Length: 171
Length: 236
Image (cartoon, rainbow over all chains, first blue to last red; front, side):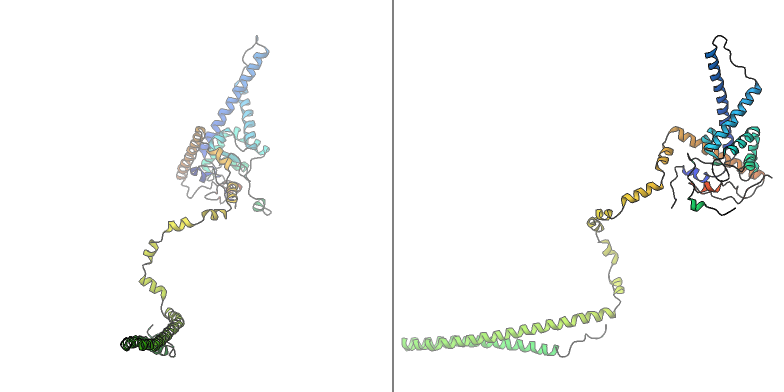
């Protein structure tokens, strides 16, 4: 018998494992954006402090061009999303909103797939709007990379079923 | 049962007549004994009176002759009474043996010829009988400790603990304000998602439920999807 007691509130249980809608995912993306921007400026502050420590007399704040800022943010975002999706399947924004990104097998994404998805998402964030058109709450990135963003309030991915129960015949 | 109770023909009349005869004999014997004793006393008194008249020698002769006669009559009466008593006891023993043999047969015959359950239902107020049963007293007499001793409480407890993720529950339900706030934000997000989905579905005149079940492996964790996916959706 595999019945287990869930620590999730009753109201949220019916949604666990279902693909999330536009609002939750947008809010998660906003949180992630805040994290990335904050990370950039924290890095900027750290670099400034380092420069001040090295050359206190000639210190001036590093110049930040718009292109440089955007490029840095792009790299930061891709790295941040890749790391989150390929490890726990969630970023800080997804953690706040109780979401998790899974591959078609229900596991966390592999690093390469996560990198591709991160590039796709950062380059074309409007792909999220495809959720409105999709009857299955899938973004354009989900359709292309066969991923799902589901409501998942558990801290960890629940253990997989018994090997004998999950074994499948040749596809 | 309509018929009369079958009674062995050989035992009852004999026993009845014997009983009457016993009583008659016993009564006769007792009365005879009493008369004989009275007569003996009268004879002794008369002889003594004659003796007193006739003088001491004659009185002595009368005492010598009359006393043995009275004693002999009294003994005869005792023997007759004993005989009557013995006969009466024998008759009572016959009666007891007869009842021992007869009553079980009669009861068996009655019970086999009537619906005892229906009779009880008809004649006995079972509810009243049940209401008068002191269940608490019965419960007090139960040895609950013995019952508990037969239950594997440790095993049950371990089984329950195996099936619940207690540390996870404690972590998740540690009622911090942060956790509650996060839950509220998440539930608000879910509600907003649902509202947007409904609005879009109405706008697109989409019929039927959205196929939002996630990957299959996710469904065997803690929750089962309400409506499983029927297939991959595609851009349209």
